[in-house]
Length: 567
View 1 (cartoon, rainbow, N blue to C red):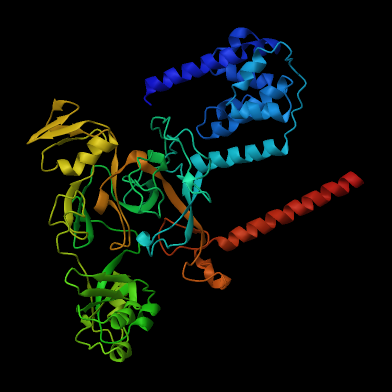
View 2: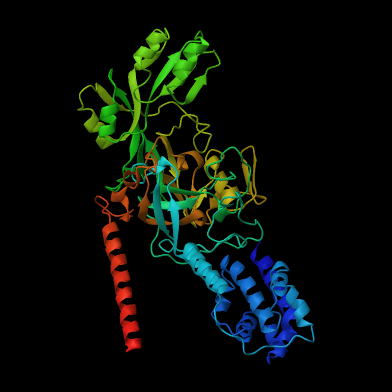
């Protein structure tokens, strides 16, 4: 809905409100016209039902108002003598239209002596209201679901994400279940209505997004039903209901980004990362021995060996080697097999037992591929049994996989130059650079784009330039070879920004069973800050001390008060 449509909708609501309540206003001793004036009519209504005028504000806060409206409908019915459960149910299920019946019911009388006591239900509803306000405009819990920022942020980290650092974004989806995202838990049903939608608006923030900031945002090209379910695609989600992603910002509006052998360059200069950024790259580790102990020593938990087998394997042989496959195996069109295993590969005794000659199960040059930081790679090189460690840089063109899907020589490690759009800036537009900005022009900024040969038309007018309507960012994961980021789908628009992670409040190791509870919790990560410099420090013990001190203070305060009352 555009602004004009929202204005007409708002006027229609005011007319309906007047038609359904003007007699109730008069019965409560107010003037008929007071039911017609927008906003003022809500303030007067709060006085009629003996509620704070501050409730009026909550009626206009998206999502929160979905909770407030039923409360107000019930309070109106209660104020005019309709106090049965049937009345309350009718008031809610008819979306307040039952109040029309009460309005024209001559027997309905106003009870001006309403008790202002809060019921358990009212208290619960207001607890939900407060939580929804905090969740929407102040701080939102978030869990790291994938290893794209490993080892900076770990799978199983639970974060608090600040909405106010970059400016809280008001909800665009007006009808949605509070405090859940795109899916209602347990029943796995869509949690929102696509219509109506509010225009994008963001409150002023405390700071702007800077390079090196870790940012939570809505995945721009999200079309999946649920984040973990990539089999069902084709949805057109509202912006604020797209899946939440977390990445590091490496390019801000106006920057020129390029990637050279996996290293980020901004405006021709290598991007200096913060000392907390644990950037990982895939390496080739050359060794003829097992590496389990060495990898455990350095915390390397993502590695594999590659095998190639011919087509004449028996079913028994195939089953034997499949059990060592990490993530399955690939059956080539030639009938041969490529199998990826863990770091220790397929034991030699298995190859001998099933009479699979070593020549048939060729280990590529004794190579193990492993994901690690440059610092760990340097240390690993010194380890006994390791012949060499070489960073695995992708040189072979991946044009169809890599944004903008038209550059055949670009790879996950080598791409660019790419200009990151800045609000108000104009670029020269050609058929050569158009693929970079096609999504920006059509999808994110809602223009009609037509291309006929070398002629470019935007909204029906031939042009050779374009002025950007909002800022954009280039986001990447620190786990460079295991991150779905801007290298695959391009820019992140400003209106997709959710917030800034500020601290890890809990961290659970996904590889440890709940039976080992002490090891399950990563105690050294509890209540650590996400940003900053130096090694993260846990403030968990200070939190525990503060909680214990508060309960002790509250206990003695109540005890002292009780003693005073009894004396």
